[in-house]
Structures are given as structure tokens and as C-alpha cells.
Image (cartoon, rainbow, N blue to C red):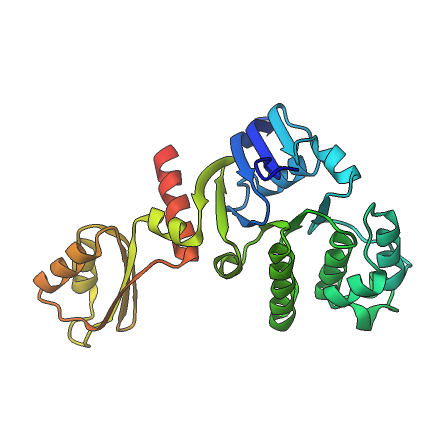
Length: 307
């Protein structure tokens, strides 16, 4: 593979199920060494996109290439490791037996003890797979996804069911994988994980690519800032809340007790108008949106545009 060959390439890919367009003209490319988060509301097409990438479904039109070949060819060659949330695990076998089998089936296997140590499942190696907790089962799925030397690791909601300590250990391992030149693609509902871990974020909505960039670029694309402040007892009331809703460039408003939280497309103009109302906010803070707030703002704006 040359450095100019994309790890993954979608070219005008469409996939539908009856009247539902799960993937609608999707084009994107992933490159070696990237850690990429795939975000989107329920029904955005994330799972279908991963299924197409892994050859579990075929596109109605367009092309999906993985390392310049078909997805199935890349998987048979051992270049792709996958951890799917819905992936079943064999019953009546131990964790060690299942991991050992996965290593033996991989074209470029690692040692089972190394795989179990990296996934944090050594202590449960003798347990039957069907007796595991949700978090333990997720770590076993991760072990299966990294049973060999794959160049692309695909993860679907990988930390669901894991506690905070396990999640931190998981992402430390993923950073090590990326540092070794592997490409990591993960879909998640934990947006703080995307913010902290991904060097690139893809936002899907209705099967289309809504945004593509770093977490900072996604936040900037949302075009809004957060304003928070407190009001005195005298200022709190229905009349004040009604006046706040009339502030220019307001996109969201939340009044909780004495605290007011606003999102604005032009924070300077909103704050200027706030003082013009005769209100004197205390503990005023103006900051950029977090990734979660930017995600909500972007998808809400797209929904309003298409409805």
C-alpha cells in the first residue's frame, strides 16, 4: 500500500431499505494512521455505513473500497479487525478458548495471552463467554477485533457497558494502535470520547455526510457560542424570560432557577442586547460550544433546513 492509497473509500454510495435511504450518496476517504469518530443521531446511517465497509451488506450503487480492494478481499487478507456491538459470542466456551480460536483464524495472528492482556480480559480467561457481564463481553469483542496485526480497526459503540476505568484503559490502547500507524474508525454515542480521542470527526444525518473535520472544526462549523450568567431574584420572572427570547441571534434558551444558559450565533450582539434590556448579569461566561452541543446544533439546523 502506498501512502496515497486511501484505507477506506466510499464513492457516491447509496443503500436503501424499502422507502428508507440509509446511505444517500456518501463519499469519503480515510487515511493511514487516522483515528476517526463516526457520529450521528439514531437512524443517521452509521451502522449501515459500517456494514457496507465490512462487506456485510452490498451497496445499491456506488463503490466501497478498502485498501484498494473490495471489503471482503481486505477482510480475508486480515487487514481489517472489527468489533460490532451486535456481534454475537459463542456459547459454552471460555474467553481463552474463543480468543485462541480468533488468533488461529487470523492470517497474521498475535499470541492469545498478548491479546487478552491488551484487552484486559486475562483475569476472566477461564470464564464461560455466556456468563460475562455487558462490559466484560465488550472487552472480549475487542480482543477478537485485535487478534491479529490488522491495518484497520472498526469499532461500533465499543465502550457500551464499560465502567469509567475500563473505558479509559480501552482508549489508551486505541491510541497505541493509532500511534503504530493503524487506522481506527469508531461509532459512538459518547461524544466526549470523540472529542478526546478522535483526530477527525464525521457527522452523518439521513445517510449523508453533514460535517467532516477535527473536533475543533466541527465546533466552529456549528457557528454558535455558549453564554451563561446568573440573575437576581428581582430579575427572574415570566416577563424577563419573554424578553430574553427576543434577544438577537438566539438559538437556544434555558432558564433554570437563577441561571440562564443561551446559545447564540453572534455572542457579542446578544450580550450587548442583554445589557440594553436593563439586565445586569452576574458571573457572565462566554465560551465556544462543546462537541456535543455543536453536534446537536448542526443536526438541528439540518433538520430545520430539510423539513
